[in-house]
Length: 111
Length: 113
Figure 1: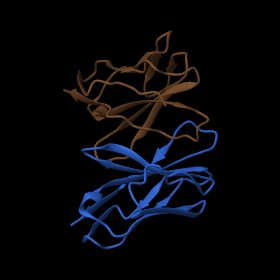
Figure 2: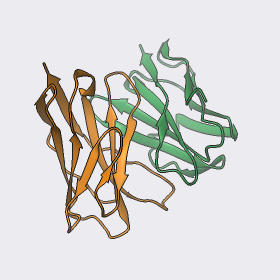
Figure 3: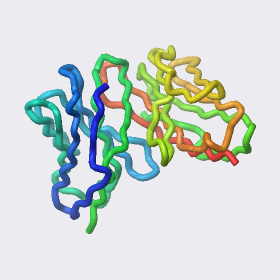
Figure 4: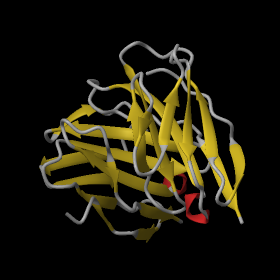
């Protein structure tokens, strides 16, 4: 699976959009980009995933660049409850579902 | 469904003792994963099963660790003998065959003194 690079930490004001970047320059054509988050003391939680096209669900939007070498997770209106570690993961869907977590980005949403 | 259920939530044991962590995956899920999380090493995949068969155990740190999945609704992770460096939070997760999302349990916080 391709390696990902994320900033170790970010701050965001409550109510503003949080934009979390992820670099995956070695991504292969059949690898998906997944985002999970982990709120303190809880298990990781799935947010969203995509292959090429931008994706949106009730939690977030995922923007993948045309060359697929980077992506951005957008939380449109961050709340204090969005404070968590966010993990960007790339993997091939047919490889048994193995998820390899990196260090992630610690997002702090401040009032 | 109640989600992935792990037990116990907390375990404190003495070095050298056997420790057994338990996991009940979501009904109908074909994949089960065991992870370990520490401050130093982050989230590490230890082993995962597909249809109760271990597929990849390359993350199991050493022979003191073993995992079983005797049926589709139950898995155990055993450490024998336990050591202080095994202290961590252990997570179990499950995923359906056609699903993209893995669901994690609340974890078991293990402290070996």
